[in-house]
View 1: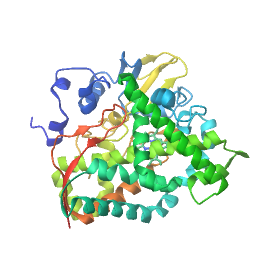
View 2 (view 1 turned 120 degrees about the vertical axis):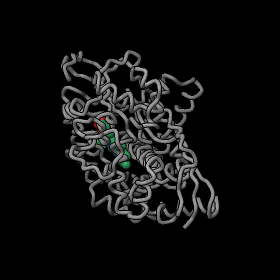
View 3 (view 1 turned 45 degrees about the vertical axis):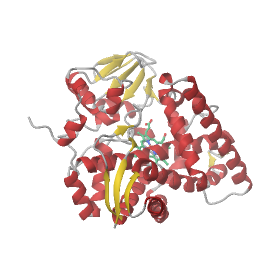
View 4 (view 1 turned 90 degrees about the vertical axis):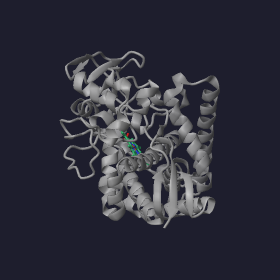
Length: 417
Ligand code: HEM
């Protein structure tokens, strides 16, 4: 059988030789998809001894779990992800709450993220993307090389969300570093004391920054989200200071690296599928379907966490009370029973099952409209302004995470139109 270009990039000898899925294995982190495929084929729910967790690979099992918060709680999600590196440990973020507590906060925030609210940010997102392209040209000239991951995709979403929250954009680079550090706490078991001290420092800086901003906005409310949270009431009660701080941190953490990685993964897939790249360049109306397929095929969030609240059974496997569960969203997205030819990147596919990329159930991503709008606007701008934008090498150095997926760096050749 002839391997497609994409399969060639994804297949590793170890996956073929029968090695089991292990999210902490550096090989697996670089190329998890063959391992997911093997799991779905042979054993869709496996026990991971080193993580003391069940990993779940099939669409229907993942879907059932996410839609049943009474059996699979979210309350330990944040502690599991960040441990002692949560900047606001005294209150849980919404993502780590179950209904009905979750429902109140969710109602409040949903209003800020409706499609019409997001559409209002569209022009500003375009200006931000154009300004970043101007900076790149000022620094590198009319043609040459720059790092797509650091000089564009890292700065773009952090600037958009910072404006939305009312954070001074001059501090966006610091912000980006703090958020990356805090998210890297997911790998804390593998880190040295020096690296952990650095993460703790970023946690404290982010907290101190939001404390200061809270005081400024409480004294002088503006049209930004933090002012809105300070003034908002849930069931007749105002949010506490800690709740506002935690919500701000959650939006920042949720809204930055994810969109950065969506834009990074998109350019990787365009490079791996030149025929698609040529079509999208010709016809920008294909940017929407392109993004949906990248979200399905190579999503920025590979997995999330849940915990069993009671003895139960999933897909024929007995799950003891208290078990840590890892729904593999990225695997569910390629499940053949829902996505025929799921291992093939195809922007023309008819998607008949909802993607798992944003989760399902009560915690379905709050930022799904925002990220789609941001990514679409960003790609429209860069395709319009750059006649050439292509990765220098077809080897991708992926970030060191089992949780998030995106290129760590992505040097590209560019030429201004
Ligand atoms: C491609 C980009 C994105 C991906 C792949 C993504 C993925 C996800 C996933 C999988 C969840 C579900 C978590 C769970 O069920 O436990 C989630 C929830 C969430 N996301 Fe996103 N996200 C993205 C962009 C954003 C953006 C731009 C924002 C905000 C500014 C955001 C804010 C949130 C929030 C606040 C939640 C928690 C919702 C709740 O608990 O009710 N996300 N996201």
